[in-house]
Image (cartoon, rainbow, N blue to C red; front, side):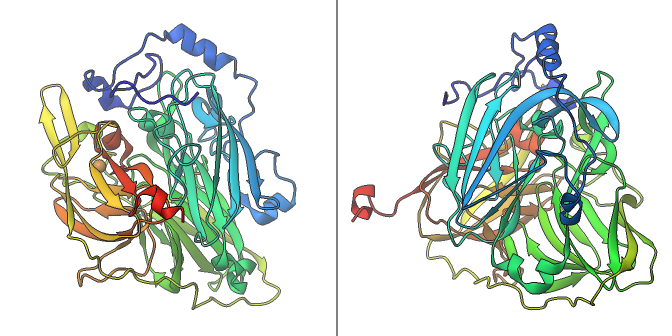
Length: 506
Ligand SMILES: [Cu+2]
């Protein structure tokens, strides 16, 4: 059942939609023997699946009877959920399309746990290709049945994921998606994304607990001529264009926002309302931060409060233009998300009713201790892309991904500063598995915030500080413009016990 990769390039079924640039790289992404007919047969066996595209969730909507299977919450310290990876008929942008999904739903079911809970996922891979699940941002065991991205679960195979969140796990907006090297852009880009909420102290702050909670997965979609869903020009929230959220006059809403696009950045702004940020990727902030706009790189999350203190009406949540690559260099125009030149609408927030009692904004939130300075030397990484005759090769420190090679060895309990240099003419959002980090500011001091994505702008360097805790084993770090990772911009980190395992076992 657990199969270690045997070759560097993973097969992609010939009938499955590839990101457009993959065709240029036959040496890196090889087709398999699976025929289009076989593939369609696999899809049609799933035709009975009901697709719930376009749902957006709030607690009160659930109170009115949600479609069953849209949410799994832990009971008695255990979160159990069945997840089936499927490809078949579904819906995005309000239109029928063949989608990659978990349980036929785009987005996938919402998973909710509390710190300290055990998470048990009965997974079955019903795709006609290899897949798996990455539990993005969780601080859990990266080996065995945990957040193990080296697993390759074969078509038709079941797998039981089971791991436990430490009792001190921060509250946060995490998520899950497939993570098989070479296939992630196709499967995640085609619809396989779900949110995984961990509740803890942040959620118990009275004002936050009283806020109406919305879960918003931002993702760009299009439908290709062959009827399959993938990245495209339509900007969606939970698979739907411009949904309406309601806010009460004097009320408070909480937006948990995930950028689940594989290449697109969002620069959020809500008309006439500041965004009050209370959490980043990996947990709550010590204090609420009011902002006019918020940049979200691919895979980033943000926890936002909005206060209903404006005149009743409708206000647009916009994404403003953002330049994620330096246009005049145009190294790889075919890989770029089309440049956005004007604000685009993501959702509409409409005033409805009046709050029974006015809720204030909380100021003090949770404790985030800045990591102390490292005792080890700075570790440096260069993210760089090279043009080859057949396409581009995406590399870290001059090497493209090899899951057999350990690129970085670290010791548990140590603290390191990592400097990422991006020598390319486009941004790279860097993601590290298993341990969240604190980004270092221009003054060299760590931000009081936990993150697992650090956007490194084109032709700049940026540093973060990280402490390796609790879990020995191998994991990865990579660029989360997912096609870059699929094409090699990923490397292996091995976290080792500071002492031989025997010595740690008292
Ligand atoms: Cu990149």
